[in-house]
Length: 402
Image 1: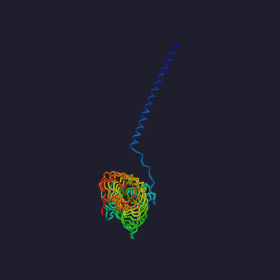
Image 2: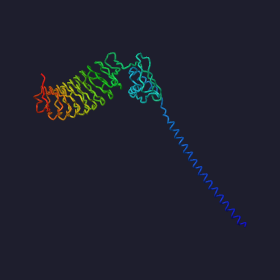
Image 3: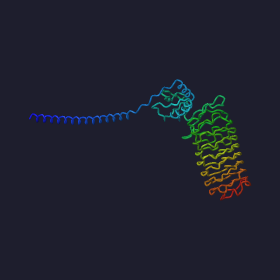
Image 4: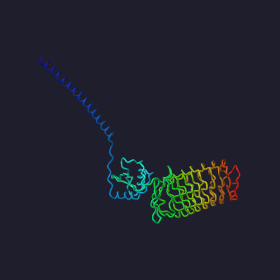
């Protein structure tokens, strides 16, 4: 009996131990689950905290005194260089052109400054405009002086040979045009103001053959180059590196620029529509222009009129949008290039196209001239060299004025 009680007691102890172990396991399982839930909850809280508190910008070093002095010199140079049509962003962009030259690469508007705000008119330099900027980690202030409504004044050296500040004015909602530069100027600033988009008449009637720094101008924002060098009788400077990718109008650009003969074949002219009179009277000009992509070209009236030395390659031009060849090669006495593949199907006016072009003898009989309704003086004074067998097959007769 005693032995039986001992056995039963042992069995009870084992059962109790088993229940204890199972209970511990259950408690551990619950504890693990609770820990995982707490961990996930902490992670979510951390993620939410990170989302609501984005990582702060790394502090930047303060500008050195030398850097501040360089910037102040730029401020002094540009203090009269803005008008009321400039926004704070325009001002910053212009200052950056000069700042980067001085290796001041981190200049920006202070936080909270409205970049779209316009300058206030300030004719009397009453410090009405205060622009807060940051140079690296340092706060700086630019205070423009004279701020006119629609114009930036032109400033010349006392001897009228050097242009100190390029003047320009806002003519319309879209045109910001450079002021005409005096005819005796031999040097201009290296940088063209970014806001200018028209160089119309800039060097018209200039007496100078070469203008220092002119070839350095960044003309990427220019849309109008009409009559820039009109009548600049001595001008003959290499401006082949000008950026013409946004230009739409080159009419009269080198008109009567009698000595100009520089390469222009690398210019991007795919947006240019107007080239009327572009080289009219440019007596010395004789450069190939076969790399020009002219798919937008619409107007070339009198383009090479009296360009007496011109015999450049223009065979590849797309003239499919051109409606008039009025006097295009009139008086171009040296021109004799094969342009028989020109697409002339939209041309209506061929008056005087090759008048007095005494060297021209190419066969144009395959030109599409179905729409041509004006042929007067088409080959005036050159009938013997540019005769019937080479003429386009017009539907109307050619007549000649006396």
